[in-house]
Image (cartoon, rainbow, N blue to C red):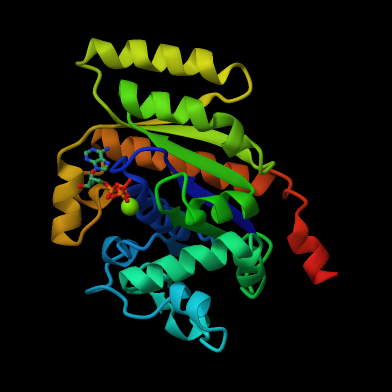
Length: 262
Ligand SMILES: Nc1ncnc2c1ncn2[C@@H]1O[C@H](COP(=O)(O)OP(=O)(O)OP(=O)(O)O)[C@@H](O)[C@H]1O
Ligand SMILES: [Mg+2]
């Protein structure tokens, strides 16, 4: 089982959209796929086609050790196993954050309870980085997928956090989302980002801006089914193919999870 954390240092970059789309595309490629929502917004379920907001989830296991979060998982129509964050009040949210801060290995221990095969994958949608949720996900990830729009402010915040994002030892890759080739400025921003990343972190994939993406979400369908020949659908398949190959080839990061199993 490999763990992929989907993070970003700006808000509204498309991490929940990409988490859901990639989970479905990997499931369609035959992988056992878990989509875990580690964002108090609790929105990933809606993207995966679950009606309404899941009331219970992993947050309730943070609040109460006797809460079995596995009892509140859902399987969507595509076979993705979905673990919600759950609905929390402001006070509960603060308690969740405090527990994650006090127990940096809490998520790793929870993930060790998942009985996934070696070629299974857990995709974690996270609250905006830095946050306790994103920090935990980065800490136990084999791969950190960092989603950013090719915009100056978003890329600047990413560059500032690069060292911290790399510090967990996971591979780090960038997905540039909402690319609009009509805007020259985006080319300049990408060149600057490339220079800041250096040789070690290629910009793996680009997903073009497509106004049909939010519309598909609103309809409860998938862009890659509604408009399979669109550029953004092609891009999403490209990211999924890259991930599928990476999952098959990349060695697992040696982590404390191994120690826990021993
Ligand atoms: N490539 C794209 N083209 C057009 N719209 C997009 C694209 N990617 C995402 N969006 C839209 O951008 C909006 C924000 O996406 P999403 O909620 O996935 O971002 P997020 O990073 O999870 O946001 P938050 O910081 O609130 O968690 C949504 O309306 C989504 O449909
Ligand atoms: Mg989100």
